[in-house]
Image 1: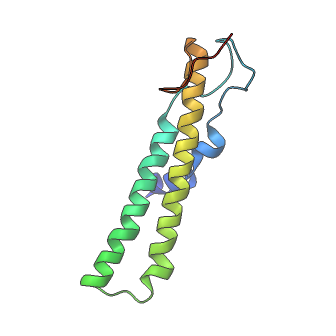
Image 2: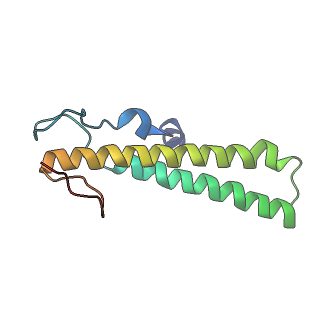
Length: 117
């Protein structure tokens, strides 16, 4: 019970608990979040929330009708899941930027044109 309450209290933790490096940071002594635990938790919770909303709708339509399930349970669960997945994506991006700065690697994209000096 307490674990689930703590998990819900930290819903979307990546928005406020994961800190990326400043845009001008260049050295390895910058202070930022290197651990991807919180974005992973947000991604898991988001997937479970969306799965619960959609799965509940399937159960509602097939065997156990719940009055206004979509309005009171399904839609809020899907919206919460989307917010959590966006939070996980944002947190993962910050963590990757931090790891790139700390380890001295470039964060480029595949197929991007090379910079002209």
